[in-house]
Amino acid sequence: MLDFNNPYLGAQEKKDLLQYEVSAEYREEKKRMAEAGCPYSSPSYWVLSVREFMELTKASTSLDTLFKGELNENLYHPAYQVLLMEHDRVEAGEWDNFYQRFAPVGYQNVCVIGINGWIEGEVPKSHEEIAGGEYKGHINRPTWEEYGEQLKDYEESAYWSEQGEGFFPIGIWDIPINELNAYETKRVWKRTYYFSSYFELLMEEEMKQLKKHMVKRVLKKAKASNKGFSNKSKKKVKKNKKKGGKK
Image (cartoon, rainbow, N blue to C red):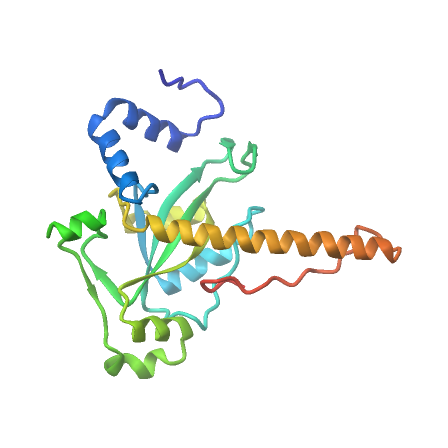
C-alpha cells in the first residue's frame, strides 16, 4: 500500500506509483516495453527551439547538480527544435534520491533529443506505434541541398542533416523548475518510451565523463598535496567538452 506520508517520496514519484498501483493497463504497458528493450519512459516532454533551450542551459549553471552547462552555440542551428524528455523531477524541499538530500532548489532532469528540423504532431509513443501504422506525426526535415549553406556553420546540425536522421541524442541536463515553467505551454503530456535507448546511451556517457573528471580531481589533489600546496587551491579545473554539445 502506498504511503503518501512518506517524506522520502516526491510528488512525481507518488503520481507514478499510484498510477502503477491502480492501472493494470499501465503495469502491462511497462512490462511489455521493458521486454522490448525500452525500460525508460517520459510522462511528458517540451518542444523548444534550440535558441530557447540555450537560455535554459545558461540557467542550469546556477544549480549545484552534475548535469548542467551551457550549450555550445556553434553546434546546432538556433531555429531548429529540440525535445526535452521528462525524467526525474525534484521539487524544492523534496528528498532527492540521486544526491541523497532534501533539494534546496527544484529542478527537472531532461534527456535532450535533437530534431533534424521541426516536428509536426506528437512524438511517437514507441516503436510499435510506428510499426502498427498508428503514428501520425511528421518531421519537416529540410534537405541538405536546400539548407546546406545555412547549416554548414553548425557542426552537429550539419552532420545529422547529412545522415538523414529525424531524431538524435544531445545530452542530459538538470533545468531549474522555475525557469522551465515559462515554457509550460510548450509541454506535451504523452508518455513515450521511444527514446529509452537514447536515455541509456547518454546517461552511460555522462557517468563515464563524471568518473574521468573525479579521477582527474583526485590525482591533481594528490599531486598538489605532495608538493606542499594547500588542498583549498582556487585553481579551476578545465571542463572537458561533453558529447552532445556541452563544454
